[in-house]
Length: 326
Image (cartoon, rainbow, N blue to C red; front, side):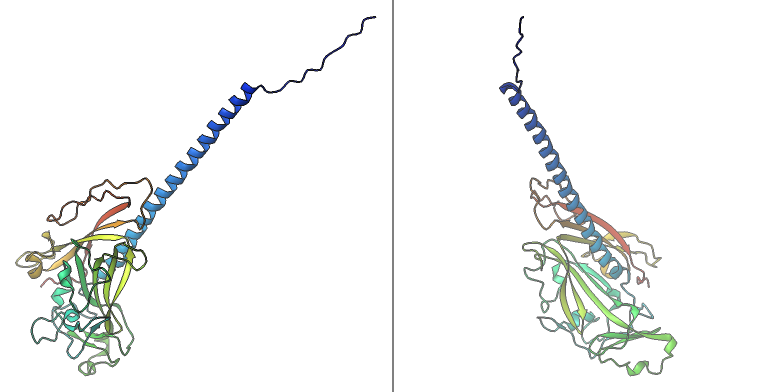
């Protein structure tokens, strides 16, 4: 009788099969890492763009209501009739800025020149008694000054510069007491408002980020002018003024001019056009800003950064609700 013997065979991966599997696995891992890096890069870009858009919206949201209310003096928007006599204002960390805040009409004048509710131009607008923040004002940028009353009536408060406003004019005071020249005025035809003076400018530095420009403003607060940061990253702001040049003003904008135009000093200003350039606070790895940005001012050269900061620009026209037209 014949006996059959079967040999058990053990089957495994050959060295070649193992190497092929490893290569395939490496390719899969490389693909996964590539997808991850691309997703992370896209997220970084989207986050940077979203932050820039948010910062631009915030800057305009702060500027716009201030500009729209320029020339609002409570119960009137007349060119004259705002008495500021007897008041003095100092700049925090500086000197006397009374004339600059109240913008008197001339030597010995005590009234606010309401025609200058909106003023724009270069850094020379800032009085030497109120120095700019840290490294000073960014070159080739415009400043914007706005003077007005608060949008809502205010409670009497000593130490704050306020306006007692009637239909025929206003008187500024800071002692928390209604001026005597308004004590016999019909209460339904007068009210108390805060005095608002803002000077917006682009500074070379920021409170929060080193070597980063910022949008700042000098603002009247507590009877003195203080300097405060609005938002970091704004590196340029240009202004144009929409004016009515007709001999008899008709409340229509005839042209937009740069702030230093002689026409801006003698014609009603009906609107303000703002161009703003904002950048990220940090450089972005692998990104070079090769774009060209053209300011509103034709006298300025196009801006070509060529660095690693991501940027965004915006232009907006804001109409004044209380423009002087007579």
